[in-house]
Structures are given as structure tokens and as C-alpha cells.
Amino acid sequence: MEKTIDYIKIEKTDKIRKRTVKTITYIFLVFWALLVLFPFYWMILTSVKSYSAYNSEYIPRLFTLAPTLQNYSEAFTAVSLGRYFANTAVFTVITTVLMLIVITLAAFAFARLEFKGKNGVFLFFLSLMMVPNELVVITNFVTITNLNMRNTFSGLILPSVTSVFYIYLLKENFEQIPDSLYYAAKVDGTSDLKYLLKVMVPISKPTLITITILKMIECWNSYVWPRLITDDENYYLVSNGIQEIRENGFGRENIPAMMAAVVVISIPLILLFLIFRRQIMEGVSRGGTKG
Image (tube, rainbow, N blue to C red; front, side, top):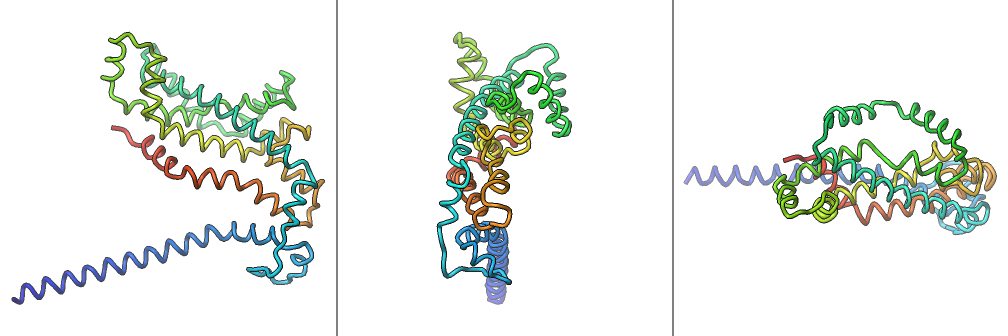
């Protein structure tokens, strides 16, 4: 009887401890979520404040009683924000598609094909990840300039059509596919390209979706390279358009209008992440797990 009572007490204590730990964990997560989301809230809040209301606040307020959408209207009229969106969409789509073709073929070659010096070549590829981006930007700038490709979509796109990291990520995913499938396909007379498209690509779909989304985000946020290679407004991307808005649009002091432009530019990426967040996590976890 005493043992039963002791067991019940231990069980209750264990439940209380687990509940306490769970409560503390959720409190921490809620606090961290508020901390992370606050900059977005502040950006949206500032974007719906009028210029006069914003400047009249000696102490910034966490709310506004007179929201306005005038700043969003000015975001599309002060500068050619619509054109910047179109340029960015073209740049993002073409760059992502070309990169997927390049990295898929490269990852398949490293994962399934046998050729002399394969390991050495792949090791050389991995070593490229240690090269500072600044050196790559300088080299690419000189090359594109010598080819007279400045202020062109080709000059914007070509340096971004491959990625050593994405090749490595996809290669690790391809290597998880059993070799027996490849050998069976070869016995049936299936070509390497057909095996890649019919077997490996469908199996690796989560990783490919993840790479696609990450690349689209990377292209959408690209700033340094487009700023270097273009000085023609007809080829500005949204990230460069922010600078144009600041210098020749609203002026440096019109912070609410600037925030409105930033909100408009950020919405596509936020929606993209919210829609495909599960695929991103699944693809990353599969790419990083072997066996």
C-alpha cells in the first residue's frame, strides 16, 4: 500500500515537472517570437503613419489612431517600383531555372557517374566555398565588363547560375537513393538522363523545392552585384530600387514612405516562406541526413 502511494506521488511530481517545463518552454518561445516579429510590426506600423504624424512623435508610439495608405500610393508613383518588380521577377525566374539545370546535372555526375579524378574535382569544388565573396565579385565584375555585358540581364544572371553549396546539398540527397535502382535502370536500357529525370528528381523533390525557394529569396534580396553591374534604371531590381527611392524618390527624411516601399518589397518573400516553410525544413533535413 505504501509503495502504491509513493508511486502515485512520484507520478504526480513527474507530471508537475513536465508541465512546468512545458509552460516555461512555451513562455520562452512566445517571448522569442515577439522579439523576432517586432521589427516587422514596427515596419508596418511606420508605413501607415503620415509624414507629419511620424515627425511629431518625440517618443515613438507603438500604435497609431490615424492610419493611412498614402505612403503605399507614393511608393508606386515617386519611382518606377512596378518596373523594379518586373525586372526582379525576370531576374529571379531565369536565374533560378538555369541554376536548377546546372546543379542537378553536376550533382548527378558527382553522385552516380564514375570518372577519373571525380573525388579530386569535387574536393576542388568544395574548396571554392572558402574563397571570399568579395574576390568573386571583383573577378565577375571584370569579366562581365570586358564582355560588354553591363546593363544587361545576361550580365545580371550569368554569375549566379551555379552554387557549390547547392550542388553539395543535392549530391548528398542523390546519394541516399539506393544504387540498386540505378543498376536496374541500366539493365533495362535506361539512359542516365532519363534515370535522372524519372527517378532521382522525383525522389529528391523536397530538396529541389527547398533549393528553389532559397535561390529565389537570394535573387530577390540581391543588392551588391546588381548595384555594381547596372547604372541604368531600366535594369534596377527592387533591392536597388530602395536606394533609388531614398535618393531620388521620397527623400531621406520621409521614413514612413520608405517603410511602405520596404513592406511592398518584402510581401512576396514572406508569402513564399509561409506557403513553403514545411518543404524548406523537410528538404534541409533530408539533404543533411545520409543513410
